[in-house]
Image (tube, rainbow, N blue to C red):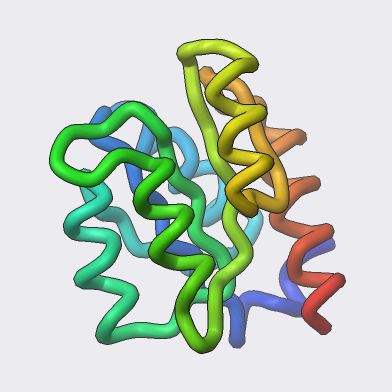
Length: 127
C-alpha cells in the first residue's frame, strides 16, 4: 500500500528509548520504508542539517533537546519535514505538540496501524 513512496521518503525516528525507536522502525521497514534512528533531539537536529527528511517521528520527553524544541526548530527550517509527535506522558503534551506544528500526534506504545496511517497520509499529501 505504501511502497510507492519508499524510493523518495526518508523518515527520521527520534526517541531516547531504544525499544520505542526499534518498534517504530520495525513497523515502517516492514511496510517498505527507509528509516534513520537517533537517540535524542540534539542528534536529530544534526541529522537534519545533513539530510533532508520527509517525515520526522519524534518522542517529546527527551534529554538535551526536548521534543517541543525539536518541533519548533524543524518547523522554522527552509524545507520543514512533516512531524509526527509521540508521547507516553498523556494528551496534554500531544496537544502542545499539535499546537507547535506536529501534523499527527500518537500515544505510546506505538500502534502499527496508526503509525502507517499517519505516514501514508503525510506522504500522499506531499505527492
